[in-house]
Image (cartoon, rainbow, N blue to C red):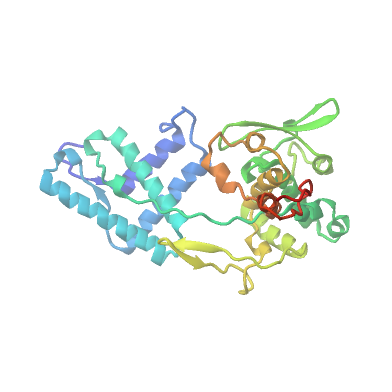
Length: 362
């Protein structure tokens, strides 16, 4: 800041923040560079700030806190309260966003201000600490084990698919097996396969977390990799994310995964039914399909079949205590049934239908 300059332009400073993140000047606490996805998310926040500033004809500025007296500090606090109210209203009302999306942008803005406090301590303000980050728990819909089994073993169904749809199915089934993120699946090379005593293992380092994962592949996953041996270097066909998601919805519709589901999203903490079916009717499972379904299906399948959370985290690459891991966890109906049956079996006079709980109690 030059001598005599009283304000910083928030948009210019946010752009510098993004450049520092991209170039490695700003790192994660452990010293690792930020992932491209994280930097891209900061870019989306900047775009919304730019649109908000343009639409409301409002110049976003930051006044150096050390140059303000008590009256001016009070005025600044009111300024940032109005900013928070106006920006969140823009996201909710003008953009139609829901709580988690709004919360992500507010979280990014708070991160930016924390960065600014370290890089420009003379202009540090703590008003951003009063910004509330809205959150919501979103129901997730992975495939059930029998649905995944149909895609694995349904040879007649596969024969009726076009070449591109067969590639989508293979990519999806492989992803539902190894619990990798879409970007990691796209980056898989033949060198990620290790063969030990005739057994096939997949070794990969996550682009996002940097964690190493080693997983023994079942025979059907090995057969998928052999199907694409003609690809140079790549282990699986490469997909653009939007194209993959579009084809995946069609694939699951063709597979008959069309049972109705309901999904509720929160806006300002109030639940709102969200109809997302492309037909305009009630939402179906196939309409909810996206690349995220692979990872969720893999994790929940392993959990529902009795694999411990510790092993599942190791395979999926989540760190211990990761909030993301528990966000992905969706106890399948079979697990819920088993656990509730065991609970009822402990009641006097109740006979459980769960195998192994045949003894009448009471």
